[in-house]
Length: 319
Ligand SMILES: [Mn+2]
Image (cartoon, rainbow, N blue to C red; front, side):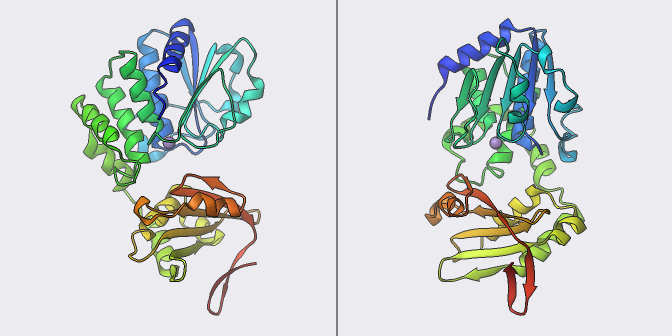
């Protein structure tokens, strides 16, 4: 685990030296990218700088009780007016599209915890051993002696709880728990975040889950539990990739299974495979994903294949 003290110094120096700063959240933003850009925004605002947040999608509905932030669509953005551009979390989901518009005299920074990030910025803070970008930003604030107020603490806790599956995934280290404790001491509302993120399932999500659970099959030879979600289900229930990830997480709790695979049709003849496992199960799902040309984390990976999912007499088939 890198401690990034040099990079943090450089980043803080850049923030303090630039008057207009752009923060960039990844497409289909989750709690970690939103939490990290909004925590940084609070800090930068206090320094009296102009700071905007860009994202190809809007702030998700379930996060609107934490922020009124309006993301600027990068297509409508004058990138040239920012001296410093900071992208956080999954920087290869959106940020790569605006990189060509960035000039030599503008400073770029990326903060990410995904493996195999190929984008390079002027300041690179990337380490896949961190639970979340919010954990990295917490360390940035701490090492730079930046005071974390209640608002910033709330945003950081949002990201950590999002990416640790409410402190249930194996990335919940003792460091993470200490950070969570310190954020709560600063007034971050744990219960409110938990209920906004995990307990507000709407009926359509539950129906989607029901359908996916009904179709689940266990392969006792390799310990795989698999289910399928068709394009028709996706449209019928307005499913998001989040809903699907959660299906995989729940299927993983079935005793005797080693990993879960959810195959979901995403239109244009593309089927997405989402693989999840748990540390104690001793499986590296990124190796499996790589066999299908995908990748990701040891315990959470994905791939895409061409095809259609069709129902047959004894189950489901990809054709
Ligand atoms: Mn993340």
